[in-house]
Image (cartoon, rainbow, N blue to C red):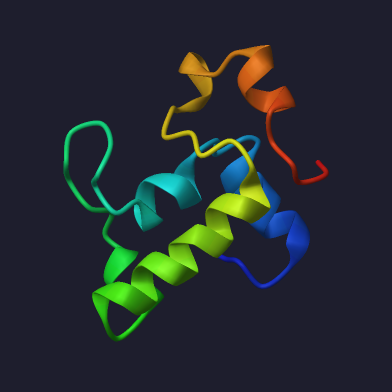
Length: 83
């Protein structure tokens, strides 16, 4: 997953890899309770990870773990980022 430019990040948030960033960074408190494989890299402590996750959620707007086939137009419209 390449995230070195805004357009690369958007491709993993909005389209075509909708929700990829959210699924990987998720803390597991929703859905199936399983943390994403990159959650542990959000910080050195649980408190720091939660704070950084909060920043991601605020930036993205609609924290959505769905894949492209399951995303509605309303889901995409709820994103705060420009795509």
